Length: 324
Image (cartoon, rainbow, N blue to C red):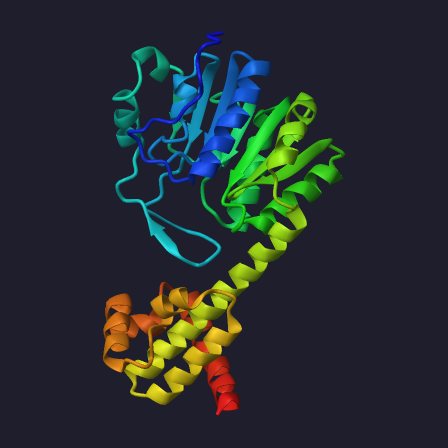
C-alpha cells in the first residue's frame, strides 16, 4: 500500500455534497484503507463520478463497482423532480479518465441498471465500503440497502447521503438489522450522512464518529418536521397561486400569512416560494414563470399530484375561511 497517498477529491470535478460531507467521506476512506488495504468499494448512484474519484485514485482500493440506473428524471421525498438528461456512464467515464490514469480506471466496473437487476456473478467480490446515493425516496433507499447488503463483508461501513430526506428508510434499515440480530452502530454525520458500521469497524469507527455525530433522535425529529413543513408550504403555494391567477388577491394574501405562521422556514424562503402578496404584479409574474401556464398549477406532474392538489385546495379553502 502507498502510505504517502492522502485521500482527496478532484478540484476539477463536480461533487454534489457539502465540504463538511467531503471531509467526512475522506475520514471514512482513511479508516477503511488503513485497516483493509486492497478494499472493495460499491457505490449506488454515481452521477458524474465525483465520489468515485477518491477511491479510483487510491492505490489501496483494488476494485470499484458503480451501479446507476441513469433515469432521465428522479423524484425525492419532497416531491420535487430532478432531471438528469445529461447524465450517462460514458460521460462519467470520460470525465474521470481526464483526471486519472488508465491503471486507476481499470479498477472501475459500471452497471447501467438497478442494483436488484445486477447478479452476484457480476459483482464478484464482497465489499468493505458501500455508499448509497441514488433515488432519495424512503422506498428506494431501503430497497437499495436490501439489495446492497448481500455484497457486504462482515466488516463493512455502509453510508447513505441525504439522510434528512430518507430518515424513515434509515429507521427501517436499523429495525431490519435488529430483527436479523446483526450487531452494528450508526451515526448521523454532518451535514446529512448516515453511517452504519459493522464488525471491526464498530471498534475502529465509533471513537471517531462519536465525536462528529449529531444527536440522531433530534436530527430525525427536525428532519421530519422540516419535510412536513415543506409539503405544507408546497400545498399553500399551489393554492395561493390558484387564488392569484383567478383574481382572489385578498384570499391569496391571507393564505400567505397563514403559511408564514404555519412553517418553521424563514421569510426569505417563503417569499421565494409563495411570492410577496403585497406586490400583486410581481407575484403574478413569479407564478407565471413557475407554472409556465395556468393549467400547470392544478395539473402538476401526474394524476396523483392532481388529486392531491385538488384536495389541498379544498382543505386550504376551509382554512382560509377560518382566517377571515
